[in-house]
Length: 263
Image (cartoon, rainbow, N blue to C red; front, side, top):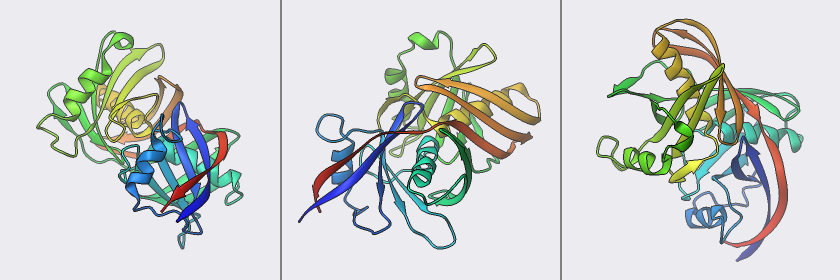
């Protein structure tokens, strides 16, 4: 049966997503082939992922996130920021919100096109050689690098994502380099299977790696430049415990459209 659906395209620091208001449950979240097709940049709408905004009791809304491969994904930080902007634009929220995602409850505040998103606490990490491995809602491998602008992030990221250490599920791979008062980060994302212009959970993991490498505790505010723009990460660090974690950056609507789908 053919159905016309309205979709919205949003981007956060170049991380772009297809958003659908699914409070009426008109879109089937189990149709993974359709989601994959819609995310295709040549045969569909195009996006790093697709999100459904759904109704859920006791929260302003629920976030369902799918990677570009059509499979339901772990937490997406920039996606969460875009969905907050979407909820504001739909009139569901005003400036503050509490919503539910795959990794639990998130709070957020929006002012103009800037969204400050609360992320989960992180209480542990481990090392893989010189790299740091953390789960900030999604699993991340973070390694310091030199000459990052010219690094073959696809080749090296693909190799690490698919090595025997991380198995079939794989891992997101981030490379980080000091830059001015902040850091430059490039990320290979599993599920997209390519480098993306930005990765929110990756930026958070990279900022935490900076704090871990410093050996210091306290309150941190770390500017992270990604290929698609600028993000800021704040948190409190006490040993291996990161709390009051926030990811801040731009989120804006790019365009609105309609497409006919068969479900």
